[in-house]
Length: 319
Image 1 (cartoon, rainbow, N blue to C red):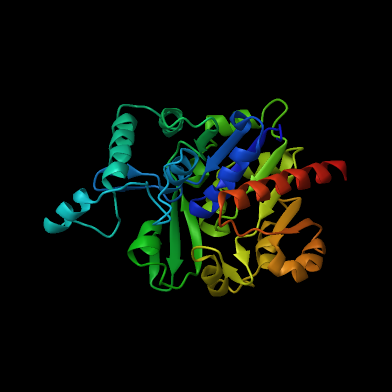
Image 2: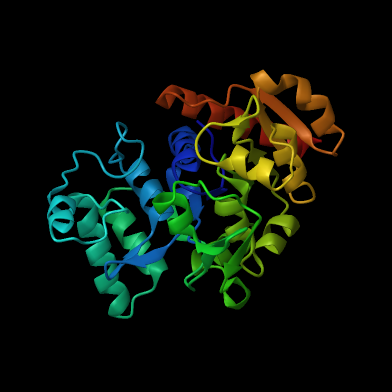
């Protein structure tokens, strides 16, 4: 087992897979802080929805719906069926068990609790030893720019199924935000020993986190190795629209393209064995490279990858 202080930046499903691997691979899971993207958060049907926080929470709590790939296990859909019969908005699915979480979160936020406090308490109730923190307690909204105009992220991502062409992104409210208290605390004192940028979409999962003032500087100034894992394998995204977005933005939809996006912030880059021929070019960017299996089909895959990343970070510290 590996004892260290680790900070992981994560979006939803793809990032949560590696987060679970780190959680299982670390000697003390309490030393893991997951910084979750909240640019996806939005208010829907009067409820405050936090998709990425919930995905990480359900995953670490052993409650994720592996059949659907999102949401909570053993879900039922009476609420959505009834809403549909009433002519309500049903483009964003809310399972009955999931709905209870959104209701309680909204109630607590309206009572004056911060998103950090609500998130930490829910993680505790789910028996999670790691810390899960929103990137900020301020509201930051990812906006997708398209040739037809600006779109709220969930309208683009869920309602319109990522079909509109992307021309850029902006993060409304980010300039006025500050990192959440748990994030700031993690970088005080001795700070983390490892920082992992999970294989989440760089534009809509990681960039919103880095857009919070002070976040980029904390990573850049930390003595800990910053290691990013490519969400692109063999020119395609493991999940989601990363490859499509890179093509539409005029970028090379490849592991090397992702590495170039993070250049200047990261020390090491992890790419899949399928893309081993890109290792030399990525090293040419001034980055150390780990080539291994990054396609996490099983829990063992996740744990093995996490252990290899930890070992890689130890090598970087010695260089």
